[in-house]
Amino acid sequence: MPADKEALLAEEISLRRLRRIMDFTVALLWQADLTLSEAQKLVAGARRRALELFPDKGETFDLIYGSRFRRILAERYHLQ
Image (cartoon, rainbow, N blue to C red; front, side, top):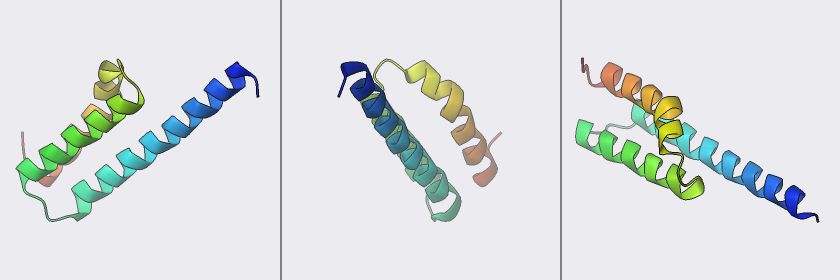
């Protein structure tokens, strides 16, 4: 398999893993009986995992998923 095709496949696999992690985190935030502290730790763990898959993409994570998680936490825990 050519190196560029291999790299694309590896990135696709990482993207699928990231999507599953983020979807699972969102589901837990909405459905699990977590304290605010536990929910924040869950979000921090999701961010750490995303950075393991895509190093140096912290700003991208914050733009795409950070706002989503902040909105969920604000709604679920009545934050302002």
